[in-house]
Amino acid sequence: MTDPADLRPVTTEEWPAFSRAMMEVFGDEPVGDFTEKPPPVAELDRSLALWADDGRVAATAGIYSRQLTVPGAVVPCAGVTWVTVSPTHRRRGVLTAVMRRQLTELHEQGGEPLAGLWASEGGIYGRFGYAVATQRGNLRGRTRQMAFRPDVDLGTGTVAPVDADAYRDGAARVHEALRRWVPGNMERDERWWGRLLRDPVEHRHRASARRYLLHREADGEVTGYAAFHVRSRWTDDGAPDGTVVVEEVRARSTPAYAALWRYLLDLDLVRSVESGYAPDEDPLRHLLADPRALLARPLDGLWLRLVDVGRALAARRYPAPIDMVLEVRDRFCPWNDGRWWLRGHPAGAFCAPTDGDPDLVVDVEALAAAYLGGVSLGTLQAAGRVTEVSPGAVTQAATAFSWPVSPYCPDQF
Image (tube, rainbow, N blue to C red; front, side, top):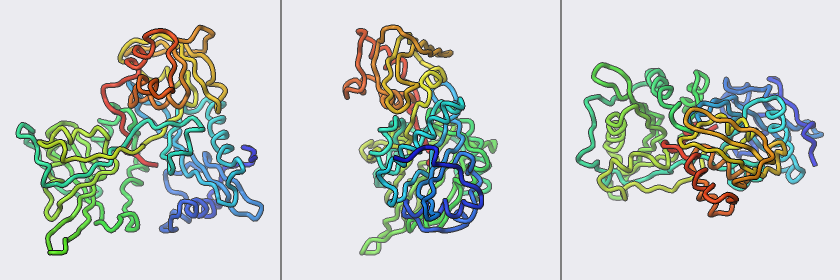
């Protein structure tokens, strides 16, 4: 078994070997200057590498320092990334060592109470206490079937194409106004906007360069934005059959949101729409005269891990009062394993260890799944992940852990 102590951060000089080892496992082609120097968002002091005897990098991992919106609050979150293990070092406990090193250091240093990641495979991270906390809708439909209801108000604003610089300025203001209200959203500083707007040809999948839209009110205020590609296609008999591939649509008002989508759905030569990273409960469906015109195949989005149960539960807010003892089962992080007294309400929360009798017994993965309000504790009870000890405890806890806004994470890392 690999010892977590065998892992160490990489230096700037070691980055080329580190990045090439990572891309080899992911099957990516080395392109651009990413292979030669760390990108602006990289935090090498939070990276980990395992070096093989022949000098190769046999495993990689990293953490981004992010800010995650949770119900009623914004909380520091360790964005786990770059996780790879070379085929030459599989089944030696390397991944377990990486996960243990990251989580133990976060706990011992009093770092972020939450960790999040995007999983390359769905069966990997559950055994380390991660669970799916947000879903992406993976939406698609035929645009000619997507007429709006007659009562949909498109407002008096205008939608217009803009270049990347204008988009970045306007979209950043809208995103900052919105992200604090939607669990799962993350901050985007200049480095993250720069990363988001990269548009290498090899990532376009035979589509156009990325295009940008801004929605402005009559007074010039930007109240919405959209980013998309167009994949041109023609049928055998010469008819247009293109697809608009929508990356993100956000707006501060319903008319602005509707106007942006109407623009996208009415593009010339386009007959279908795809949006892989839209929310699974996207309001678009409720704008349509025929809701069946929008098809969805939800997929996992952000996976979440409660690094420190007490701090994580105390950090969020609860729309209904809760006062109960949770017995948390956590095999991988023993400091979480035990009973926690949680008192919460809309204005704040308190959580601390206790020796009181439990009202609920829950495994840490189920608690992570419910943390942002995306999965009901009642659903998790039906799956055998929550055990009710005190009558009515599941109903009370499910109500308290819910949130009016569905969680959504548009930031893949």
